[in-house]
Image 1 (tube, helix red, strand yellow):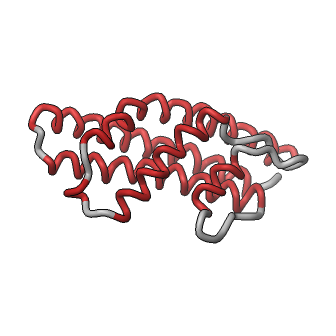
Image 2 (image 1 turned 180 degrees about the horizontal axis):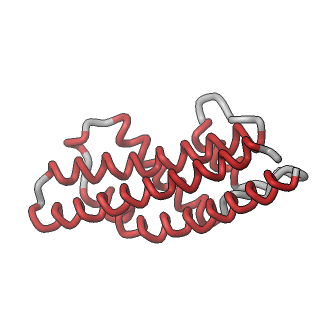
Length: 160
């Protein structure tokens, strides 16, 4: 039995539940922004979208560390992490992310970079609107693919 794999599977499941809350909050706050056009709601949506991506990234970092035994480093490690987890590691694990999910998450990664590097008052609704529009679908796809990987971890963890 591989306790690390079983523990990681449990963490993935728990973190996905937390991310569901972040998705719902993002959508609720966006509705308030659309009604009021109050920029403070826009700032709150941006923070929640940032939180969504960093939550996904934390899961992916754990997978890279525990399953692969390697996490990318350097200037472009955030992008490299996505690419790593969209690739199969022969004899160790299947791809964690599909190509379509990789593409979707890369948009949130880019936005995370924007939020971290500019003042929130410079954010514009047209930067956020497409991310909100795709948030439910992106989360659902993350949930499907990460839960499939958690199942893989549990199968692997109990058979070794």
